[in-house]
Amino acid sequence: MKILLPVDGSKSALNAAKYVAKLTKELSSKCSVTLISVHDDVGLGHVKQFVANSVIDDYLREVSEKELKGAQKVLDTAGVKHSMVIKRGNIANEIIALANKEKFDLIVMGSKGRSGIVDAIMGSVAQRVSNNAKQAVLLIK
Image (cartoon, rainbow, N blue to C red; front, top):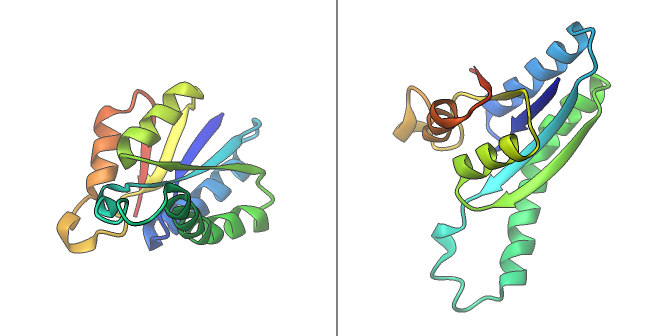
């Protein structure tokens, strides 16, 4: 079973990583897990005219690596082998595109991410992914 685990550094995403660690231990079949971190750079539009793309790329990579650390630690502690992907663009679209391209069986993600109050019930990214993905989507609180 191929599992895609979107991570944004939120408590919900960390809980999803813990669930995946538990799930892979309980499944007798071999599982592969890929962590993905996506940053939407639309908010950096005004900065792009003053800063080189390579500087923006380096900054977003640093932020992504920081956000991925908690989930990596959970999976490492559980002995779950995993890979990581860092993307830039529309978050939901990038998650779905990778899930389709790499033929993932399941997407496990936190139900709410960083945005908090705006998406009090279910995060907008989680909602878009669950509504548009071809794969099964498991949302974790």
